[in-house]
Image (cartoon, rainbow, N blue to C red; front, side, top):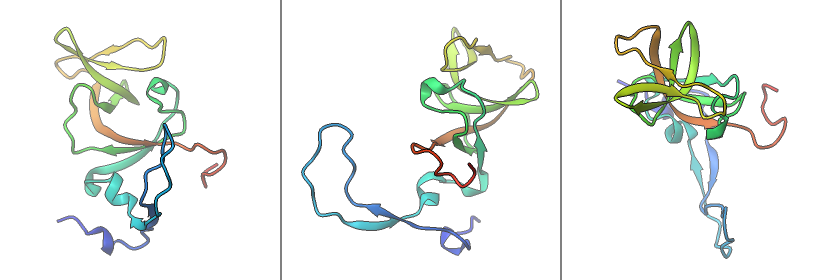
Length: 147
């Protein structure tokens, strides 16, 4: 049985502003209502099967996933076409979009000049490792404790 988040020591809860930020036309200011948000509950629906990985490279830059981004990966989900998946291919981890083309499954990068990788129906040298649920990247320089 999963451990409730409230019983995990060291969790941090951050304030959540009650109004969404306008990314198009500005909206009139409302009263700002603050609540608390637990990013574990928002981003990690199945904690026992969730892992984090850093992105290395630019193969998925067309999807806004950049070198150094942090991925939230759920290993319990079944990969389906259209999902971003992490696979072990040829002994290395790859992040690609799973697509069905002409009755076959392919691993497709979103960056220009990357060839799609056909999947062998027999399994071959590709093992599905998990489904990427979220990608976190910094918008301001030097905000990560890692940098």
